[in-house]
Length: 217
Image (tube, rainbow, N blue to C red; front, side, top):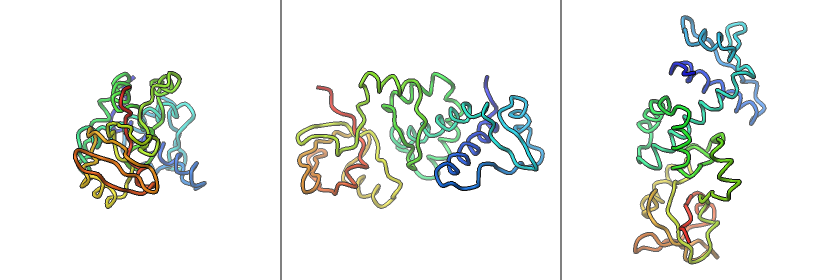
């Protein structure tokens, strides 16, 4: 079953509304229904949503599809930032376009390529897929914060887990970019690492935001 792009966007908005309600105990768990939008009828016919008094709610039958939809969107965001290095509004726009191409099976390949990230660039959780659960069972998750490495251990930078633009710019100026090799030199009293021929010192909070793939041994 392939939903229209607009229907997928509605499911995303509903998933986020439910997610925010669960996290902040807010009352927002529905969205307004604009007039003349046929995508709502598409989702109603599938029993994914329920419309009451001009507001639309995600039905239990639609939660799994909503979960898959938001997973594809957030994986697309990670792909834009971590692999294609497209950031800001341009990255978000392209992620919105690309997510609709991540049909079942393609999203698994993208997730595996990214080494099963747990959050999007904005820090929101990426719902795990079967590939993530299998990787955890097999102990095959090589993506960890820099703080998990030992002194002398090397890895490859996977992505930066921060939405603070100043921190992002500072790390990027150090050469902390996806794909670059990084070696942890020291863990106390500060984290000292080497990228290329340069060494840098950062605090624990910033070190946690550098996500790396362990080097194969």
